[in-house]
Length: 349
Image (cartoon, rainbow, N blue to C red; front, side, top):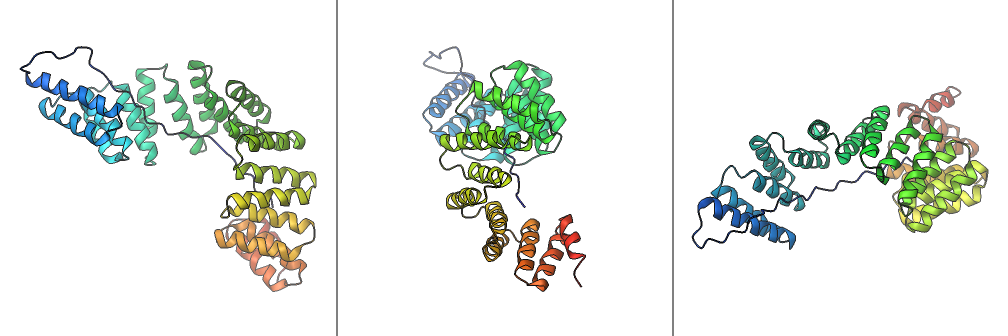
């Protein structure tokens, strides 16, 4: 069985918004607050020069001298996020929000860290940004991504639409709205959104890949193959595009062409279990039953819970007159939730 791979762009980009002071400190004898601002400005300079440890030290001195220095806490959090100290970054954003509960930058940056940590409360922080600034396209976009991951595809479409209304050239939002529509079986709408994404940015290989998958589901196999080829021309190591093009060729009955693409995908990513299973299906169509079993073995070795690989291996084993092995594989597939496994195993004693 050919396994369809969905691909949604999801990018975590920590908001590097550093608040610079407008006044330059000129006094030779500085008051504590002036000392704090001096260290704060030094922190901004160190951050700009990628001296993150130095910047953290500078911002720490700033908040030590001025404990209510909200922007210094926020910027220290940004700097800690750059060093992947997500817990430390979260603590600093929390402090910034205690000092200013309407700091949209702190809510957004805290949400980004929560996203990186798979903390489900990130959605609430994006909602806080939207409440305070309904024009923030990124907050809608990232909240839409969370809804997509939670299979709330209609909610995701709504958020991506709001992101686009605030930023009409938001290529990623068009792409991901297309992916949400595709999950809702709205292939025409999905293709239209991928078209818009590619008008804004014709270099996005994954949008060609995604549009190809929508075309494949809509029955336009030639169009799908062309889009997968465009994705590959932009990204030579795109093993997913090779796998997907192989799937479209399989659907067209070009089994040798499919095998060639699945083989190329595996040369780029030898641990890609889906391509082994898919190549097994193509080999089966060409009556290479032993080769089909070998590829299913490889898929199962990579993923012991790959139900469709057990199903397909059982079908190939049946053709090799290994009835016992076939029944065992179908039973395993059924146990792993593959309905066809139960159907096949009904004929077993």
